Image: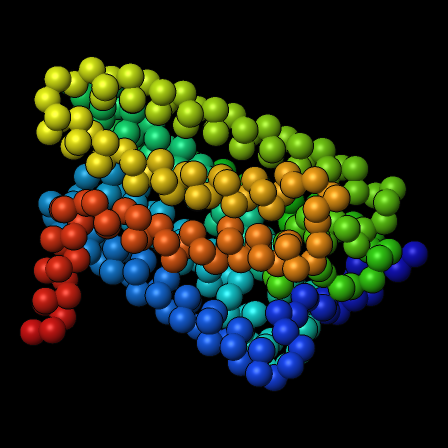
Length: 308
């Protein structure tokens, strides 16, 4: 039995084995990464610099953009570097750090999306109490709780996973160090503790998902009772971007982790991993800014100011 400490590196799944395809992978990922950096940086700067956007909704959106930037920066640059230098290697400590950061940021993002659902629920269903329930101190505490829950979850999973002995080599069937794929390398009699942690995390995630669904059932029941078309349109435009982001996040992660083993293959796993780890951080800012006039105006002012 070879212990995990005997490995000083892991081998990641390569996107391509020919130089032409490697360069294509680098070009595509570079374009996506730069778009994500630009979109999220503009959102963060626009919200931070415009005092009209210093409200709970935009405060949470700023946090979401920071998490999106972190998520895509955890996986994409290393993948591009490996293709550039025609290697698959990642150091043991680098793999542990990548696994920790990915779980931390992804867990924090889902917790934050749950908090944002509560914010939308209070805004639509209890508008008279919005100022009390969503004060600045309460918002900071909720955002801090979202970050802390992701950190604690990542710490437990990473510490436990990378303390397990590995008996199946050091080849990871993924383009980044993802904890479920590291677990596949562990000895069959040693990973039950981590499986228990994964079940607990899955239950927490399911609980958050149920909370979001119930919140939106309440929201839509109230919105549909609004007599004016303009009022309904305003309420929907406030809630639908968040619902679209949640749907994108949940659907891609669900298909990646809950699909039957019979339909699993390295190429399919790779495609799904790109869908839930690379696409959402790039698309989320576009979804939020598409129908939001306040955010559009703030972004327009920011771009005009930069050109002066």
